Length: 453
Image (cartoon, rainbow, N blue to C red):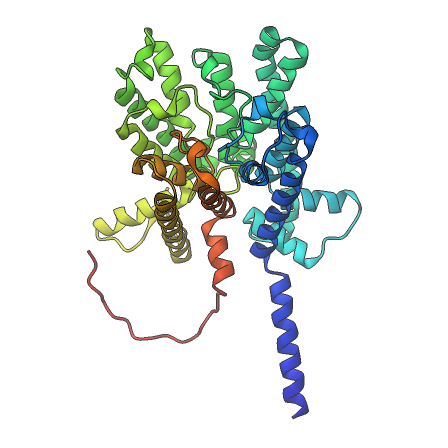
C-alpha cells in the first residue's frame, strides 16, 4: 500500500515537472509576457502623439513581437521616438527569439543554465543537443550584430545624404532592424514606396530580409565551407529553394503586373520594372515591406503572394510560415509517390519518416489555423473574400502585407488577427505540442490500405 502511494506521489511529481519543463509552453508564455509589457509601454502618454486605445497598443505590440508588420496605428506619424524605440526593441526580441537573450543573459551574469532553460533553448533553436543550443545562442547574437551592423552601414550611405546625419542614421537603424528581423515596420505609411526606383535602398533592404530569412545556421555554414557541394543537405536545400522561389516569384510578378498602370505599368524603363518586381517578388515570404501599392496588384498576383506567404522562410530564422524545408519535403514526397518510389530523396539523401510526418503535421495544422481564421474574419469583417484571405495568410506568415483590410478589422477582427500572428510566430507544431501530449507506444497493429484521392 505504502509503495503504491509513493508511486502515485512520484508520478504526480513527474507530471508537474514535465509541465514545468514544457519548452513550447515556456516560449509562448515568454512571448505573451513580452506583448503585455510592450503594450503597457506603448500606452504611456509620451509613447504616442495622440492617445491610443488598449486594443491598438496590444495589436501593435503583438505585431512587433511576432515580427509581422500589420499596423492599425501609423508607426512614423503616430508614435514618438520613445514609442518607435519600444517597437524596435520588441521586434529585436521577437525576431531573434526570447530564448537567445535568456541564454546570453544567464551566461553573461555567470549563472549556470537550469535544465528548463536549456530545454527551452533547445526547442527555440531546434537543435539536436543541449550543448549545441547554448552555443547557438552565442552564435545568433554575433550573427545578428554583424549583419545588422553591415545593414546599418549600407542604408546609412543612402539615407544620410538625403535626411542628414541624425535622421539618416535613425532611418538606417530602424529599417535595418525591421528588415533583418523580417518585421516590415516602416516609418512611412506607404512603406518604402518612395524608394521604389532606388537600387541602393531596395537591394540593401532585400539583402537584409533574405539573410534574416535564411537563418544563422545556413549563413554561418556558407562562410565556413564556401563551396556549395561541401554544404550540408539542409543548407543546400534552403539556398537552392530560396533562390528558385525568389527568381520565379520575380519573373511571375513581372509578367502579371508588367502592364498594370497602378503597379509596374507606371514605370517607363525596364530596369525600374525589374527592380520593383524583384523587391515585391522577394518580400512576401515574411518580409512585409512594399514599394508599390499592394491593394492595386491583380487577383492572380495576390494568389501568388498567398502561396509565398504561406511557405515562409527557413527554420531557425527570423521568418515564419510553414517553412521552406517543409514545403520542399512535401514536394519531394509527392514526386517520389508519382514515380512509384517509396523513398523520399533530396540531394541524394533519403528523408526520414519522422521528417515527413512532421512536415505533414505542420502543414495540416497551418491549413486548419488559416481556414478557421478566414472563416472567423469573414463573419466579423465585411470585405472582399480575397482581401480577408490575404490578411489572414499575411498574419499567419507574419508577413505584414495587406490589401487594406487591417484598418477595417474592428476590435473582434483585431483579436482574430492577433491570435493568428502569435500562432504563426510560435509555430503550428508548437501549438500542437501543447494541445496534445505526445506519447510513444510500443503497440503495433496490422496494416491496412485505404482509398485516397
